Length: 410
Ligand SMILES: Nc1ncnc2c1ncn2[C@@H]1O[C@H](COP(=O)(O)OP(=O)(O)OP(=O)(O)O)[C@@H](O)[C@H]1O
Image 1: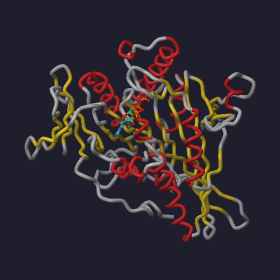
Image 2: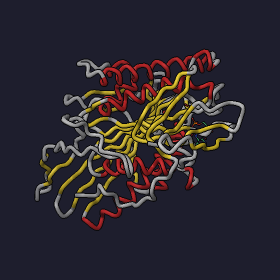
Image 3: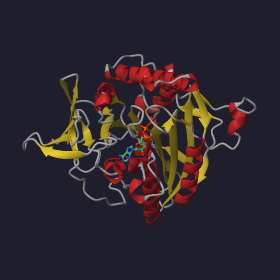
């Protein structure tokens, strides 16, 4: 099967995308470079162009994980979910599902039939909550089975008691998304009117079988909207909000410890220190294709947090994980299926239309990748100022406050 080129065509990337970013913090400049850096003026469509190939590869039988990371209020939920009802504001999750449906339908003519299943859960205060279960309240108050993470004999991770729904249309999926959004733990904080107080994991399992060749593929697409990091003294949180903020920061610290440990190629990676890292283990420690989207706030008061986030993203960018493995089986005439070895095909993916393959020379490992999207600053008008031809674009503010982020087009 070869649908890697994609059944859907996309417009070319715009000029509001580069690869470098410079941050001024305490009068010091910090430079970073990533797979892509999007200015605030980039659209949801621009960002999706860069991840569409990766989404496509879930249909080809790969495990794919895309997660949004950043401080509270920086635009993670906007990026991942956006407004699914409005075409130009739809985020990565509704766009991914649309692409998967359209591409799978286009492959029908080549004999492929697909079954797609969805599950949606949140990690709230270190507890797993099923966002689709009918008896969710019963599970929360302990009168029915709670979700928990189980490791099977082959080291695979399963979530027990999680509702898995067969998805047959885009409208049905939109309904599930609305249901999950209503049930997700949301609270008002000093930093964000509608702050998501949990990490949310949307999973699509994709089973394909070719009626002509009996080949089978099994891909997984995990789309994750992490809760935002937040300085406790800035958050001014008390009571429940404080407890949530502490739980969010603790689990994000565990994620950072895992990323640091992988980047340093340490033998022991502390995946089991939190629910979040246990769930992410197959993505960060295994054979999936993983992408982090870092959301940044351009406000001067956020430069400290932005620097921390950029450092985490730079580390993620340098992590070498396993070889992406395509899950395929060769069916036999009598209807049985033989493994074709889950052939570990070294098909490192290339984000979007023009960046380089990220496979390291001389290494059999592929690396995780990172895109950065800078949010539009509330109440600040931005203008673009050209410094010189080689440096490219610098963001400058038409306001007394100077924007501290330079987006360097390279
Ligand atoms: N690129 C963008 N264009 C327009 N509005 C945006 C953009 N990014 C974020 N916003 C708006 O900014 C606000 C905060 O964004 P959002 O809730 O997505 O942040 P978050 O990082 O998910 O926050 P939290 O971690 O607290 O849940 C929302 O009202 C959102 O609609």
